[in-house]
Amino acid sequence: MYHGNPANLDILKGRRIAVGVCAGIASYKVCGAVSTLAQAGAEVTVAMTPDAQRFVAPLVFQSLAGRPVLTSPWDSANPADPQHIRAATALDAYLIAPCTMDMLARLATGRCDDMVSLLAASIDRAATRVLLAPSMNEAMWRQPATQRNLATLREDRFTVLEPAIGWQACRAIGPGRLPES
Image (cartoon, rainbow, N blue to C red; front, top):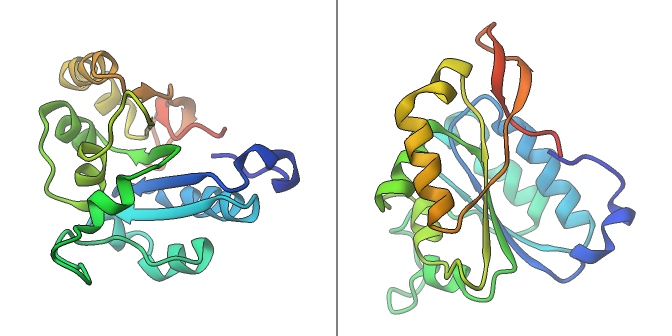
């Protein structure tokens, strides 16, 4: 994830960017990216899966983004105005990071029962880029199911950022690390 000088990111000023956070050890790296986006002047909305909240508390992202974090499809101030539809409207981009093997499968099959996948399902990908930053163990990355899901997602106009290669928290070395930029 990018941790450079926010002054070099003037293009982000005023942009509406959503960041979906899934459960994975790399979720701590997303904190720095959200902070950088907010410092660059982007309006950042963070959505989290329930299991992601076991790695990083929503309060951390709320503090960094300066906005409430979307954690449940059932938390809406106005039931007539679902928050996932409102959040998906007029976004400039949606980044899902770390995008786990499970999230890849959810997105590829149209399953949307958490805020991250529900927000992705609510976005018109012809108008808004949805970027996936996969992060998982190298054996999980190489699974045929993962590769099939990635092929489907690319066909469905998701932008897949290639994972980095290197040391992983599980003590393996290989592809699957969250991209650094």
